[in-house]
Image (tube, rainbow, N blue to C red; front, side, top):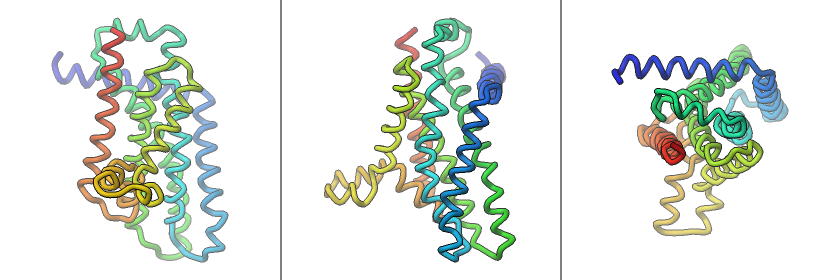
Length: 242
């Protein structure tokens, strides 16, 4: 298959996946809940702290994503299995990678749209005075990579079951474990090489680094490797079904 045709096929499938979200009222409910909960949790203590900073928002954002990302991915494969359409998809003249990338990018763009709508918050805060844009840009960039990692893991888990509730709960637990793996209270119970491994694989550690406004190549490479690994596992699952 030539490259232009390969990319064009992904593009067509991607548009179909993305529109599937907005053809359902559930998508608007997800976005509404994300914006309301995020804004409320941030603005509630904002005036009490008397600091023009979005640092606290990027502390709570990964925890909101813990619920939002599994809710997005739980239907991607589980629904296909439940309705029986996965057999039809696997017989189409497309590769597993095309199908998986289309679903992943559809979910990722939907998550990114939700995140972009929250930009009204830093824009509003900019009228209150000057504040450091570095951590804000870093926080949103880190959120995109963290969200992508959550989605890749959630997609893989969804491919293992046809029950959406099981897919949601398992993905939530999986994302939670990877997020806190490198946290101080977890690493404190270990030592030596194991502690270093936990710090490296912990999604939260890499997010915190980027959210401070320090964009390190190793953090970006880690997130891209994490996403690729779980998408690759997803491909292996589909190959087994074929």
